[in-house]
Length: 379
Length: 111
Image (cartoon, chains in turn brown, purple):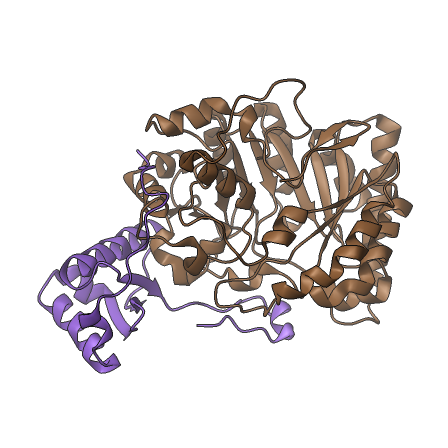
């Protein structure tokens, strides 16, 4: 896993994990205790106005699509605080900025002392909304499919002629960058490109866009696929992109770091573990309200790993239930074979890999020393 | 508690008796086993396919809440492992994306 990237605000870990800062949870796990996730990755809706060609949400349709109301998410946050969840990322399988619960969610989490980060396309993130949430966010990561307007519109929307979506996103990102500087907000702003092998001509343009916008970082990551290869990603083709990725990284400046998630790109579709230990530490919740151990299990196909829905019962009761722990234990049992039963490179990949190496004694996780990195509560 | 002792244990593969059966024979074996057992399986689940690689594909006869279907399907899988072959795993049929905009991409979830 890659070393942290030093930024003006502190060390940024994007191509690794932060388990070494949460040894209390590791010890509870090893002692056979029940423990709260350090981080939860979730969405407030399954809806989205974009149609990104790389979007994993296309493979995440569950049986139901419950409507998540503000009251549901305020209860959810109260339950998170009660059990000790430390960070919540609004990412997952929907565009959370579209939800009416979006602003209340972020503001309530801040009151409870829970860190919140948000990944968004930035299309429905106008200045008024930005002002309401930016002071309370630890980070915002904008999905930017490509560095050029026409390519961006082709990858993320209906076609290259729809560059208005690019213009709107850039306007909103620029406003956030300005607001952060003006009010000296402790929020990290980044853009992310999901690299499909056929997008090699977009790599340098994307890095340049990051510099032009003045965001803190521009990260390039792999594209995940399910175990049936629905998206048809050919992981062998990533190797041809290495020189361009190295060139992009070298464009980093004092203000903007260009970061490549080398670890995931190099692992490709080769899952290095059989058992999946990460979900109790990094839980995922769908924009349908579904609680499942990982986003890759949201689809109806994985119904046996559907634990509950927080719009139908309180999250704290789901977390306390036997079925929650039965599901986590199933993923740690010989019945589950990660290389053949789940998609490639899940969000918890770094955590899964590190915990697997820890259990096998290959590389033990030990208490970190020194200053905490940025976003320590997002594993 | 989460059992951490299986990190390097191989997932069981279907035995010869299972692999030597035809698709029709495997499906019959699964259905016969269920018909002799718990009424809850018969009332809730229809078996669609029983593959040579140990995957049992089922559908739910009636909608179940997330908290109910997870438990039911785990119980079903455990039952089949015990009575037929320890390698058997249960999956539901996948659902495609309901987002009409994203569906313009023409990507279908593979079965």
